[in-house]
Image (cartoon, rainbow, N blue to C red; front, side, top):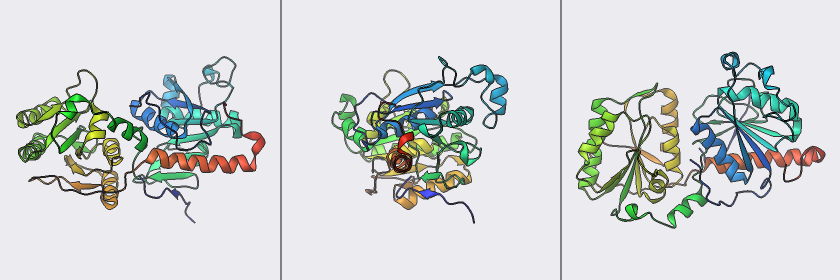
Length: 358
């Protein structure tokens, strides 16, 4: 029989905002986030940790060239003296440990071996190794991996929980407050292995945004590091007469405010993370498809459409179509599952589960 997975129903840059954790069970316990230095991986881990109310320490790894070559299957280099006193990875062991990214997998496996049941280990994203690499593995639902200790959500975890969005909405930044409603947040990614961002694509997106503006919408435009300069230049030129905020990478990033105060979104299809963060708001999301595509993106976007979160961005637009859907909070859903499994372990082996503060 094929292995089963636990599907969590309804699913799919952190700040110092005080957020009430979803569960008191693990609040205040220690956590390690084993990081390969990629901001996206850390954001996912921090989002779940925040939902649990954990006290986190981020441990960034820089394995040797040989260890990098053999990751994720090989061991931690002996020169790192994993578990030795006064080392980077030494007791007291954390209550929870997270890892994401190929280079982190040898470390979470070593921690699981040495700490045993004292540490509950979690891997976010498919480690490409055996399921016993951690106690729990999370993958997005469009990923093919399944197993007894694998959980899936429609969207990826992040820090934009319901509580954080409500806090952000309590105070509107002056530049956003000056924009007339409806406000459309335009979240732009860039070329990837699946998508090209061609001149024709820039023309199609620019035309749609200009039409929204002509029909009374204001625009809040946020490119990413991957956005080609010429692609952004085309959008800039087409919306120059619009009521807008165009973030060019200077000064404080307004992305969080855009998410909290948008009435609708336009998101490029290449970014699973930006689409997932927009889906945490419950507001309408138009998906713009650049040239290209891939089956995993098709599965992801079909899931969002089935949930009622998104619609394709048409070439000809006028006013925003109103629609609603249940907001997606994957960090909270993954936190639910960690808490459930933690409680089972605590009931079965109470002597091996450390008290709060560890």
